[in-house]
Image (cartoon, rainbow, N blue to C red; front, top):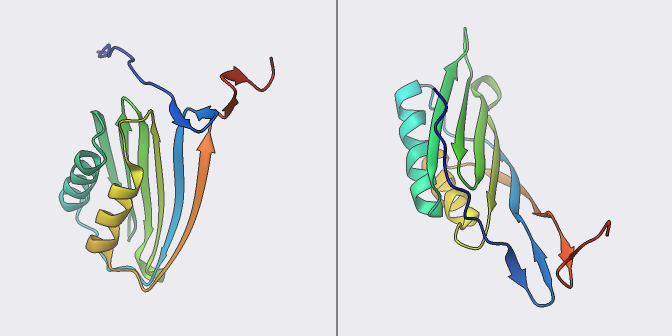
Length: 137
């Protein structure tokens, strides 16, 4: 069954520019090993709450012999983690649209939970508009 959710996202405004949202692409190196599916699900749900986003669905998959992936579908977009415990490497994707959600709060929470030794972050503004117009118009 498909749940219908009203879309009420407002564009993020910054000076004379506006865009759909912020996409954080993050790499954690030397991250704490957490391979319990239920714990990962709780972490994703709490990260969603911290961003002030609307949770629609959570999916977590445990791989054999090791590894775990989790995805949160948000009304404002998504969050995903992909974990390679044998390398203590965690890839994180946080994309939130609109001016209500704060993706950096999820990132801070993930840092607290996984305690990485090294972090690499790419911050992308998605759906860029200039002077209120789409760039292809």
